Every structure is written in C-alpha cells, then in structure tokens.
Image (cartoon, rainbow, N blue to C red; front, side, top):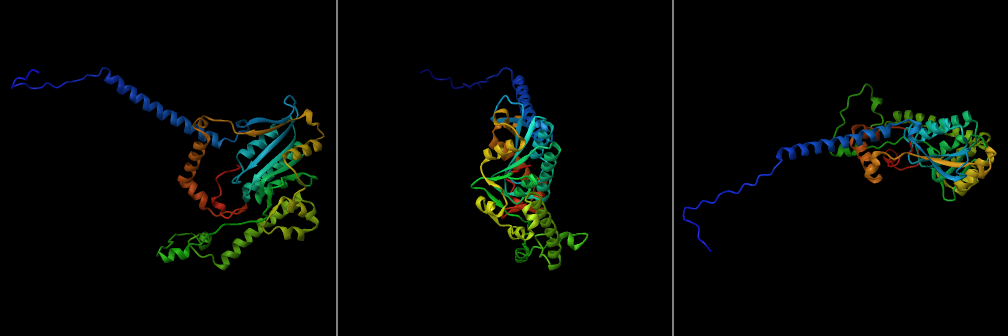
Length: 352
C-alpha cells in the first residue's frame, strides 16, 4: 500500500444536492396542505355537529316493502338527553316534512336527562303526532327511565301504545338537582371561597358552601314544581292515574321497575319488542304490512368519519372536556329527570 506524502492535507468531500430550493418549497407547501386539510376537517366537523337541518340525516330501510311509498318512521332517542335540540329534533322535523309517513314508532333507550331537554322532546313529539294526525307508538329498549319515560308520554291517551322489552328498566319518576358539599374538605386544607356575588343566594348551590335550611327550602320548592309537572305529564299519557293520583304518588318515588313490574303498575301497556310496536302502529294507521316501508334515520358520514368513529368520539369528548364551556356545562347546577348516581357527568352518549 502506497504511503501518503508527509505534507499531505486531506481535502474535504462536499456533496451537493440539487434542487435544495425546490425541496424547501415542497416542504413548505406540504405543511400548508396539511394545515389546510386539518382546518377543513375541523370546520366540517363543527358544521356537522351544529347543523339543525333535517336534510342532514339519512333514511335507512328497516323492514316491510322496499318499493312501498307509505312509511312507518322509527324515531330514535338514545343516551342522555341534554338540550333536546339536536339529532332527535332533526328526526322529528324530517318526519314532519315527509308526507309519506303514516305512523311513528319512538324507540327510547335513555336514562333521561335535563328537565328542559326532556320536556322539549316530549313537546315536539306530541306536536308532530297531533299536527300530522297519525298514531305514535313507543318501543322501550334496555332503559326508558326518568326523562326517557317522560318523553314516552307523547302517546297521550292512545290505547296499547307503550311496549317494553322483557328486560327493559323503566320508571324512575322524579327530579334531582345535584349538589356536592366540599366545604369540610376546603376547611381542612385552609382553602376559602372568596367569590363576590350580588346576593348570597346567587351561590346557594355552590359546592364550596353549606346549603342552609332556608336555601334548601327554596331549592326543594323548585324541585317540587318540576316534579308536579312530571306527574301531570305521566297522567296525560297514563289516563288511569288521572282518576287515581294516589297510585301514581306511590310509584313516583324515583325507583326503577322491571318490565313486568311496570306492566303490573300500568306504567306500560305491553311486553314486546320493536316488531310488536311496529305491528301496533300498522294496526292504528289501518295499514297492511306488505304495503308499508319501515324506516329509521342516521347521521350521514362526514369527512371526519374517515379517521374512524372511535377517534371522532375521542376528539369530540376532548374538545368538550378541555374547553371552558365544557367545564362550566358540567359544573352548572340544573334539574334532571335522570336515573343516575352522577347526573352531571353522565354525558358520554347524548341523545340530542
């Protein structure tokens, strides 16, 4: 092997890459494209989530004749009811505008929710039934408790119109305003609520303060008023209780009932699945099964759906939990028609 001269200096090897400027431009354009794509996804998701248009739902064939023009519409109420003016209302509006719908089956699978949201859905279901002058039948799924039972009263005094599955949980007729008292814990750790309010009653439901007997009486009066309305609504849908209010008082303790118990007490009319409810709707509408198409509704897939349903749910949940509005939503005192030990936290799946 040859030896290097004593004064040899190694020369640096320089590798020149062509198109350096082009690569930089491409990288910038790539990041801009990624940013714009993300922005489009967020904007579409926000528009989709806030849309109130009845055209933003899709109709899906369930059973019967696919070629029939007359329809029985299945309106689904699933999960916790919050404000009410959401997907359930979109279904109601869609059915109202469809002249081919001759009967309605309301499929309830809900533990209830807010007083206002439950009453909103009840009001619009009853209005839909009366304006279209068509029968409305209720099919209870795994749970139709509290506000879920409340909305079922849209059948009014129509005979044999509430069907509960053999394993349905229903009842829970009552009202609750959650209040958690951490005043003792704050005292232990020397934490003081130093809020400034226009009147002491502005903070009477604050979890950082004891609820005084006077304030408790005020809140109890409010709950009693909402409870009275609940019982009036039950009487509108269960005519037997109009003549025997004491019987309803016995049942309206907030307790839940099995399907058989509910049938025994007159809270439901029949034990049966959704097929039996559809058959009853056919009977009331004087329609033949082979000349009717049974349909239900679903939200259409959006661009956000391309990242997967699980990821979309996580994104929506994170947005709600991480925003100031979401935190305020969870901590705001409100009245519930809800069967749950933790009312303000039970929002993992919303009906509205």
